[in-house]
Image (tube, rainbow, N blue to C red; front, top):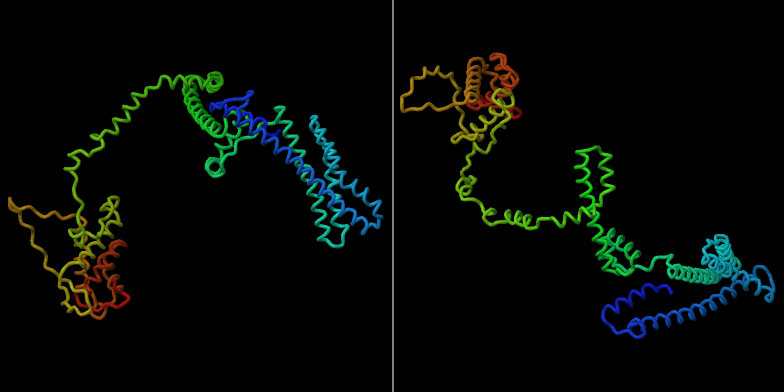
Length: 437
């Protein structure tokens, strides 16, 4: 039988549950064996009846096709087509016997398949009505395939009974096992073939243990090879890994493991006093400034620390920032209806700074701010002196004039363009639409 080993496993499980045995077999296993025998007999009777019906239908198709297409008399057509129809089954049975004796029987199997294909093709082509011919051809092919399946089942049962074929494996779940853990399930199936007593869940547990052992073995082999190779050559390290039993090393490491020390180490990191913030860190922490305390001038980000005062990028950013601060200063009217201001006159030279008193402290001014204010004052002074009356609205002409008079470089020319426009606004000069910032 095909499930001999499976029923033996079921018998062992029933005895393990404490069921009483009768003549060496428990009542449950005896009932299952009796039901299996009845099912085998019933399947055999039904299969024989099926063969008879299919054979009669196929023979009817063969005979009618031979009479219509070949013109053979009915008395001669019946034995001829019966030999053709049964020839494939006879040769296949002979091949099955030879395979049970250990041979491959390739010639008999190929001849049987050729006879079956010929019978199916004759049934299809011998009838003018191809629908009717397809029906007879299908019945002929169905009978041959069912017989082929039955012979293969019997051959596997014999191989399994002699130990040449592994027993049937447990039925693993499609979603819970094959889809979620395909590699683990495949390994469990292999272990169940080698040891049928594992069963469904026992094979899965064995596969998990084997995966853990393989992972532990690889880790130990990696560390051991590195330490031995540090003292000797790599070939000696490979020999050591081949000689030493890594499972024995893993067992001794597990027996010498200091679980108390590792537990105390983890518990020290999880102590509430260590997880809570210290009072000093809470006292020194500063609250984040609110958006209301941020002035308009602070909305412009300062230049990056990588831009020093000697770089051109820093000078351009400082000039742009100063211009934005002047535009955002209170009291400045930027609308189209703002009154025009008088032309800016050159400022008199500032008097020499006096010595500050002891209780006064001079206001610190950066070099960049002094340089920007100096450039702005020089641009405004040059425009007051040299700007033509009829060309004060052309910003490009004024920038070129300031560049030529003051001998400015490219970076100072960019800043001078901004100061020219501020001079034009202060002087009340109308600026063309394309020249406005």
